[in-house]
Amino acid sequence: MQRELSPARRVIGVVGRSGSGKTTLLETVVATLAQRGLKVNVIKHSHHDLELEPPRKDSARMRMAGAAEVMVASPYRFAIVRELRGAPEPGLDEQLARLAPADLTLVEGFKSWPLPKLEVYRAAAGQPPLYPDDPHILAVASDSPAPDGLRPGVAWLDLNAPATVLAWIDDILGQR
Figure 1 (spheres, rainbow, N blue to C red):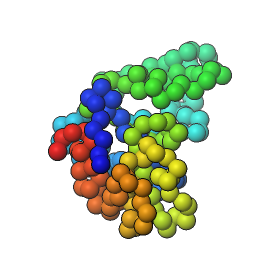
Figure 2 (figure 1 turned 120 degrees about the vertical axis):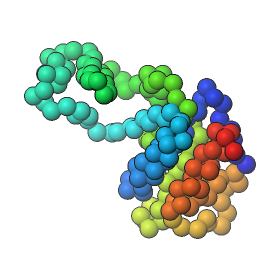
Figure 3 (figure 1 turned 60 degrees about the horizontal axis):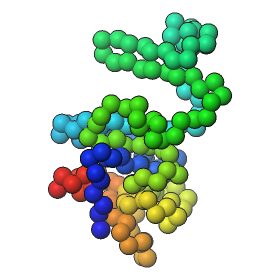
Figure 4 (figure 1 turned 90 degrees about the vertical axis):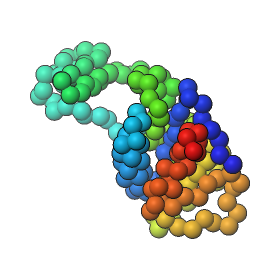
């Protein structure tokens, strides 16, 4: 049973253990959806500090001098770096609100947030899957066969056939 996402909330989380292939899968998914003409946003959560510019560049110097936000802009792209300076990390809803409108936003990370999720799982990694403990995981993309006793409503997709993942995304976007 697929759940169709409303146009106002077309957000899918992509979760999985480190090294499972989340980023590799997302590259393929984003490229294919963009080629179809869809506007796709991505939020990548990191537990590490971000260094987006070399420390000696003007933008980094302004940030280190105390600027609350620094925008670096060129004719090709722009980036805004906001220093939290001890403030709590903004939640996913706040991060989503900062993005431009899109047909779909894919979120890598934010595992604990209650949003529809796709898990990327490789049994060979030797760690248990996340889906048994997360009711928000609606599909698992894996390189192994579906296990016996798979929770009803969880789609089991072939990680090595990205077209199956794209078809699942089309289903929940209501485009098939």
